[in-house]
Image 1: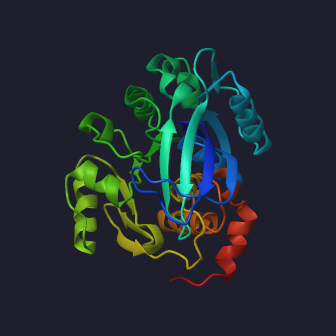
Image 2 (image 1 turned 90 degrees about the vertical axis):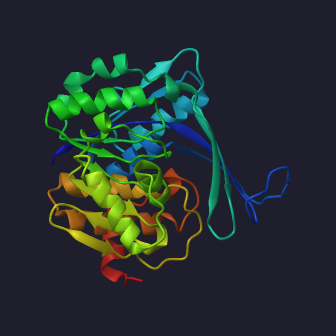
Length: 308
């Protein structure tokens, strides 16, 4: 199997279930509290590993109990943690998450050690990038660090998947390095400057990004599925019908499962459907990494499920 390198954030999630997301200045009495491993980079690494991928994770955590627990969890999932760095001065990243009764969420992040991953750290692992076939990244670490990794991987002709979240503007220098980009609708609006209100708007946004030199654009549409665009394909792929409990890591699970399927030489459409199935399963459980399904469960779900 081809090898997958994930570079990104590692957080500890503190989750409170609430009837609805509080308004500014409002206090709501919540229900269950859950402490769980999270962070976009870590979620995607775990999703890739549980989907059957050969995964190495590069991140930075604090010298604290949260960091120690995170490393132990990654190892249990079979992830190579050799290149996860320990910051002596910063805490492990923390995310405070509200989850409403209808499965929606609101998140605030204290980045901690995640924002101390430097371009120099990436230069030090250039040989590791060369040893892997796919590079998967997000935007919960410094943008300069993401650019440094993309530049090296692009020079080495590696497949680079960028999940541009949290949403922010990205320059053309970075975009032209990307093989596959996976924004949601909000992120696509910020990247393109286009309002997305219709299927035609979604298609136009994908065309805009492809014109920047990106081979494949996958715009994730939540419960509606995804829109997939390449030079030869323009296709909406519907999602699977499930009862959502918590959507916190749905996009991360999609990306991790997608890259594993691609590493197994599945077609882009097959990989996208596999990612959709894994993502759908994840929203039926609470928490980020606790909700990430195993490969056998995704395959079973695919055999039994009917689409929306």
